[in-house]
Image (cartoon, one colour):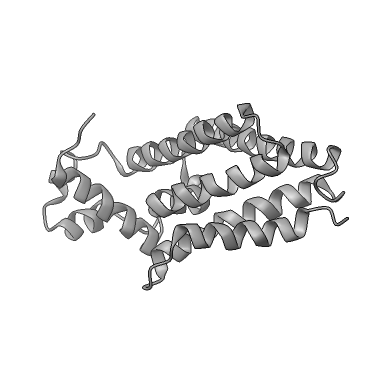
Length: 193
């Protein structure tokens, strides 16, 4: 569904404000003021602040799930899958940094039953990352470490990247960033001969 340029501008500005102030501290009045119109006009763009959060969180979550499902079904070995996972994170973060910021920081603000649904999807994603790591260890490509530690270290290594795209004034080449993050992760997980 195509959205108007005015609605897109409103949504983009809303994401920036939520990033800056935090979801809980951002009010409907703040969002309206950012665009220079009355609070009542916001409802032409969104049903509620909660619906804005839900929509963006589940959209970006679905983007990550679609990507990792393709990776899991690929013919790549575990190293190739881990590289593809890093690439997926860089690509989504470089194109949708504010949505990824919501995913990292604001998901706890969802209300039930959406919160439980989201936590379930997040857990499923983490399990898929864990499977890639387990396969790499079993295949002898990755070092034998505690799988939970490796899984969460890999995820932490890619989750912070949205800060770079939002808070740094200089441009960063996503391919260079991907190479550096991949090298960093693989220096930690690769089994030394």
